[in-house]
Image 1 (cartoon, one colour):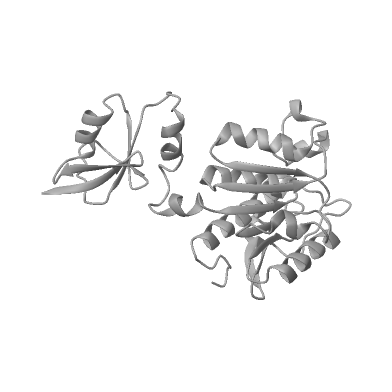
Image 2 (cartoon, helix red, strand yellow):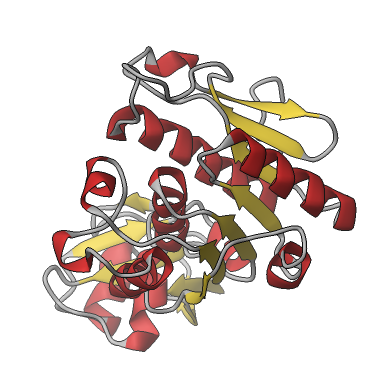
Length: 273
């Protein structure tokens, strides 16, 4: 009797009772990392019908056909197929937005629409995902280049412009989820109100409260109303003597990225959910 095993995203019909090592020896003998259903496995692990096996050779640069499978190797089965169909919008690519974009690219989200009018400057480097050789470049173009180095399968639409009530619907109308990653409260309100008025059924994941060096555990994801999720401590704003630094900004950003992932999987990302 045969069973179906997915190896590096290709289906193979194999005899019952075969092991991960059997398939490695048959399909990729030089592989020295074996991952079954998102978890490292020994060669002797028996496989079951429907299992997903990823075979990796350390240090080898995969070709384009292999890369998608290898990026998803540690995912929970079923996640990658869903997220790579998604389009996510990110409004603002500073400390929050650049970190969210990188997390989602590593997760395998298929399309990102990023919008920001700003340039990379030295003060950004304390918390934003840019490099010295990118100083002076538009942030969206610098981020697009960085994302291409991480996962060239992600399509990035980079919009170097200032978002206004007049262009938000045009730029973000195709997204499944919108991430708000602005600095100023009035910009945040403008974006959320404009988008919600045009697309009331689409969720928005926003950031609120991550300044300073306060407790990490105060940062949470909370649901407000029907389709708005706020990530942060909801109180700690940047002010004289209370700056924005990589640790707490990064925690809030990854709350946002995780909220996006859960929404794509049909789950409630809020702390109360």
